[in-house]
Amino acid sequence: MTALVGIIMGSTSDWETMRFAAETLEQLGIPHEVEVVSAHRTPDKLFHYAETAQHKGLEVIIAGAGGAAHLPGMTAAKTLVPVLGVPVQSKALNGMDSLLSIVQMPAGIPVGTLAIGKAGAINAALLASAIICNKHVEYRTALENFRTVQTETVLAHADPRGA
Ligand code: RP5
Image (cartoon, rainbow, N blue to C red):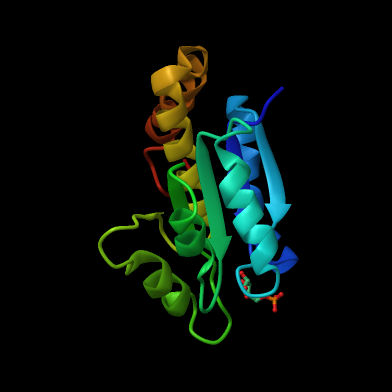
């Protein structure tokens, strides 16, 4: 099935974080693809990926990167496909560097920036799904079910002591 969401990341070391985006899309049954594309190490590949994204059917790109995290911004600069950025938690600065370099885009090229790390990866997938659902209504039920199960789980564990 043609991928609707592309998950890209700057390094294989980002997979530990970005796998949560892939797992969430898997859970929702949203067709997606995963690839390492580095803004710094493989810039030509990044340009090609971004320039061909729309034509091959991608409707959202989730881009995760750490440190001087140029990947989401550079991707967004080369395509009109909406880009969601996930700041990967870096060792040196705990992801503050990643967060600021993704979120502080100058006006003109937007990147929808999520939280640092696992939460951001999961939420990027959920947000991508919500965007996809506007056109592909067949995926809406899965997203609604996700919310319902989440709510029921919280309600069923109201006592934090686990009783
Ligand atoms: C970034 O540099 C990647 O997104 C990664 O988070 C970070 C470190 O990469 P590695 O040195 O682990 O390959 O481009």
